[in-house]
Length: 529
Image (cartoon, rainbow, N blue to C red; front, side):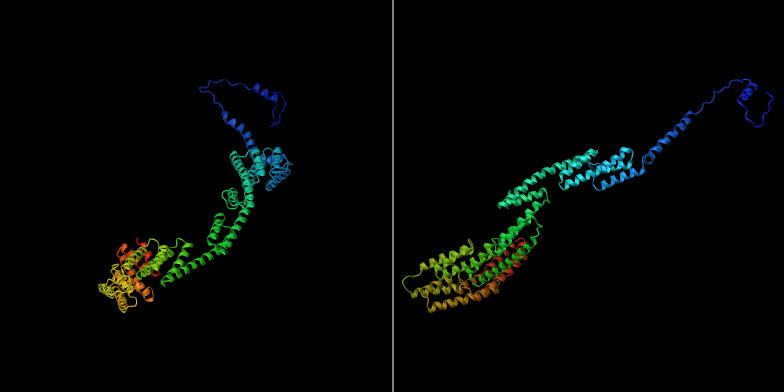
């Protein structure tokens, strides 16, 4: 060491350090270690070395928008994004002058490819293009629909959405071609007066057009005009009394357009007309039934026939005409008994026309034939007192046996007719006829009191050949008809349907206008009779 003095705490120089190392005595080497020397942990060092770059990359990803905003002027990008969003809100998705939403978002991405708002904006533009394409398709603006579809395709819209819209567009364009042809044909048919013909009438063609496009204004106006004309025709038909024609016209309007504005008013008037017709029908039915009860058979039959001409299904009118036929057949029988063959034949002709094939007509025909045979048996060429006395004795004997009108040809009435024909003004004949009337009335009352309804009806028939109508006979017919109905009620309660039906028929034959007939028949039908 030299003699230069060093201050305490001074740092030795490089030379000095070297000199110290030379002067320091070396340590003797020790014996070798039994274990290998320890190695360091390089993996930890590597992690420490890689950590800063990783943190830097994550930061760039997280704050790239902020970094880009620092690199590119913030106010300019914001203005461009705002303008693009305004264009999107206005529906200006793409414009040739570059001012559309798509072009503005793309301009931002050209300056900053990582700008998230611009990327989201383009996705919104693509979705808006699909929405506008569907809206244009709904309004049948096919040109706009194709334009927006092309924009969505250029912006890589999902293939499924594109294919669905394209298929609907092709279908609607094809439908529009068919629709145009239908409307043209409909207008031509309407102009030529072919309105309701099928399938080429104007109404049918307009209906087909509305099936393809329910809101087509041309088809709606054309159909509305046709239906309004049909309603006017219905009103004219009602005014002319052609009710069925009016009903058919209104039904066609209802079938074509139930919500037609003029329909409720016409339907209301149609309902009033229907009610008036029904009231008229009821009044006509009551009038015909009244004529029948009063014995005005020709007037009654005319009323029932008029009702059947308007409504062939009317059960009341059909039954009334049958009852008139039965009453006319009974008149024919009385006329035959009086040997008034010409009148009997005319009555029988009417009865057959009103109620063909009825049992009453067949019975009247038999009585007419019997009367003809009895007339042939009468002596010709003047009065025979002995024969007259014998005929009157036979009549009185039949009355005592109770054989007033049966058996045919040998009944009291048949003998009295012969006597009356032989000596119309003879006192003995008049006395025998009065006795016949007294016995017939007494027979009816006795049999009715004993509830022997079949016998009572025979007694009433015996009276009918003499009385030929009248209030007294009508009252007794109603009394007997009520008894038959009471008997029918009993049989119905006992479950004897066949007997109940026969009793009902007997009551109807006696008194067709009896108000209790219809309610009982309804109960009988419900019970299975």
